[in-house]
Amino acid sequence: MIRVEQPPQRAVEQSDAALASTERLTALVHAINAAHVDYAEATLRDRSEFIAKLSSPMGPDEIGEILGTYTNDACKKFAEQSTRMSELLSELANHVYRPFESLMHEMTQPSSKPARN
Image 1 (tube, rainbow, N blue to C red):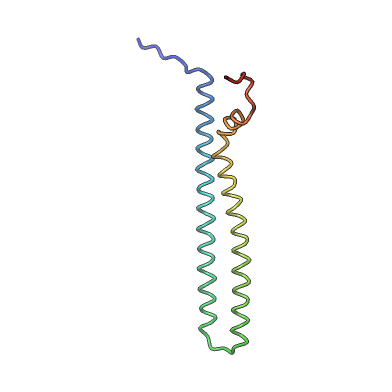
Image 2 (image 1 turned 45 degrees about the vertical axis):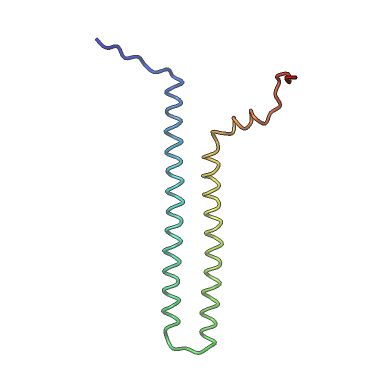
């Protein structure tokens, strides 16, 4: 008869932590992708509406007003999207580099070992 031993509790905890970390990483990448797709779709939709408005006959004042409104809205949406993407990418970077925090802390702390001559 084959005897199966239970893995040590620490190994189970490490495995669970790695799985949770991978799931969070995947969720962050999907959120970044979804934000990019949403922005691209909205930009294309807004541009199509802008072109449709410009294709109708109108005077120079109306063209200037449409152009100003489109430009203003596009700049605002770009700034909002840049902020959103920065936050998501910052969260992703923090998540990716979190395992190295303890290593960096050890490397930057003064050593308690005597120096060699």
